[in-house]
Amino acid sequence: MPAQSVTERLRAGEVLLMDGGTGSELQRRGVEVLLGSRGDKLGPWSAMANLDAPDVVQQVHQDYLRVGADLIISNNFRTTRTRLAPVGLGDRWKEYAEAGGRLAVRARNAINPEAYVAGGIAAPGLGMLYDRPGSDVEIMGEPEYRREFAEHAGVLAETGVDVMLPEFVNFIADCVAAVDACAEAGRPVWLGVPTVTTDGITKNGETMDDLARALRGHPVQAILLMCSRPEAISATLPRLRQAFDGPIGAYPNVGYNPMAPVGGRVHLGPDLISAQAHSPSRLAELAQEWIEMGAQIVGGCCATGPEHIMAMGVAVRSARRPGGPGRVGGSGGSRHAEAPRASGRS
Ligand SMILES: [Zn+2]
Image 1 (cartoon, rainbow, N blue to C red):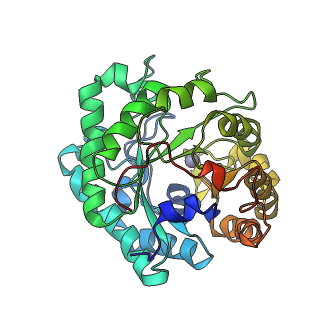
Image 2: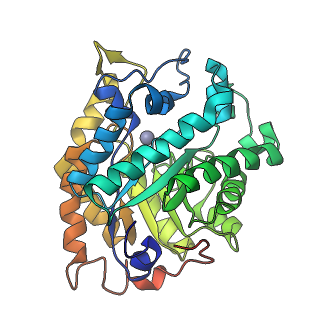
């Protein structure tokens, strides 16, 4: 367990390096992640790997830690009852969830005990799954939605994760309910907001102002833009900085089509161009830009790998130098690091 809490480090204005994609990296290493997928709808994605390929999961975590990640996200994206049920594993979700937390904590303890583990829990995403309009809260009902996050966070807290990260949460109403539910586990809660656009809003047309306003008074310590194109992050991050007083961060994807793996290797199809345009060195430049915009947590999502995180680490380390952008006043300093209502004990 780290000597210094992640809350203290954020409050001191530090910039932290997050890991890169886990599911895409597992797929790249030959792990089956498409079981239960239909058409362009993903099934439980990387969830089953926690029991079926634990060594590879642990290896991915360890590789990110070895290239300098200060924080890894556990492989719990879809270890939920809702997303495991369609493949007949709904009643076993706790086993998959617990294994995900334990693998990440074990990797951390083995490679860098000062690193942190975020328990990443994706929103059910039922609207996308069933092509139904509306948020998860509307489709599931708020009590059921909250119960899923709260139970999952409780299992992850038992495994020793440092932070709860409800992520890929698409609607503001869902964000608020997910944050509240995850906070019940007694850890700081960060929120991962996906698929922002180059117009600086979410794909549902919701603004960063409305997001921050809705979360006011709720126990969210940090807000991160995630699984969005890098250029969309660059457009939206300044708006998030304006709207929200706590720590902010970014972990973009670099173009990815998980449904088109070829011969056990990922075939990026039309998105290949995007992936090439965002080479590790380009992503490192962008990380520098986001740190100057105030980001205190930077990493990667789908299709980023250890090589991207290693390159981004250069930007993070330069931000840590006295006078670097992560510590000076103005864009990224500690004036933003006070959580509105930081919860939990760490
Ligand atoms: Zn992603």
